[in-house]
Image (cartoon, rainbow, N blue to C red; front, top):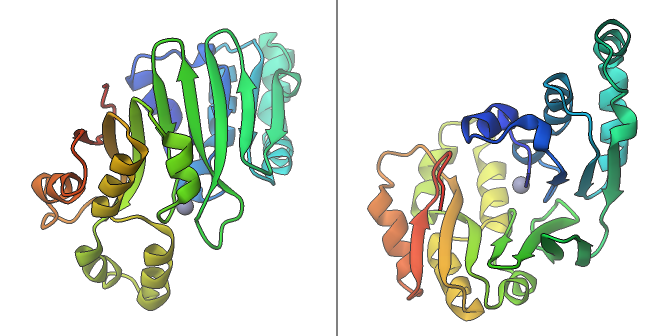
Length: 247
Ligand SMILES: [Zn+2]
């Protein structure tokens, strides 16, 4: 599982993945749309019958978040252990804080590598690359255009890149009272769909998946506009990300 935004446990089940097979969680950075359901995923998977090891990987304070989450939910966890005969949850979860880019883990199925990406003021923020026997997939996390990410993505089959559509940012922030600060933040730490296409072309990936759309809910920013922006510099295949999409 890469990142744990709102509803991630439900989405996994909707995607046909039983929660009990959860094995690794990779968090790109500590923003709520990427970590809000990190603890809930662990707890709900365990309540659904998970009884095997889970390793979690991501930036600090992942250890503290995990520990405090178990503390906050101690009543439920202890009740289910004594009343329902479940195995203790905390010893199943092995937390690994990542500080720099490089090798993360590998097993018989996959080798995982990270790169520091550019998401001020959230430091560190990571992109991840997954090399399996038959495919390679790179997830950008949230980032401004990043040379580290281009290096990480070189030659990958699929690059999933977060994107924004700059002409619509003014309309997006006009809906909130903190418009000026929000606009400045978005423009500093996201990548336009056009730029994501340039990055995909430079990295030589086969398929670019546009994800984490900013804005995601502006009817004036049509599927066609997203696709045209990404395709203006990229000659590979472009896919517009949607919930539960399988590629
Ligand atoms: Zn973020």
